[in-house]
Length: 145
Image (cartoon, rainbow, N blue to C red):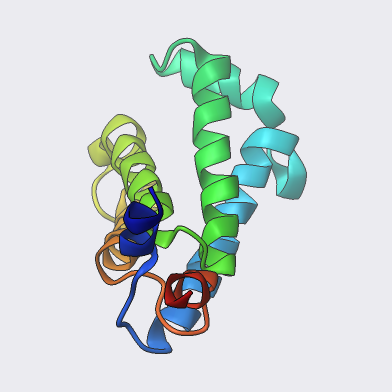
């Protein structure tokens, strides 16, 4: 198990990952907090769950809990640089689901509620899943020991 964790946390990436992790992590934490807690103008679990059920993601409350948790806790993991590869993979999956179920029919651009923003977050998540956390992360620190 220790060897597996070291492989998951190992990274040769430099400091560029630090800015990507922190900025994208902040975005994910904020979106997750909207879904989970109703912060930043969000609807909380109940409201988000009702909306998810209305678009066919059932059971809505559970889907809101899963999406909100992936975004909030995955975003925290990005900010901390802890277990980046699994966190980024979960976030990438969440973005694929959001793009396919909500945004794809509206075209590319955000002005039409398109998938432009989700695609950018998907790209960042995939990049982090491939590269790892980079220097300046808990992954880098823990994988050295």
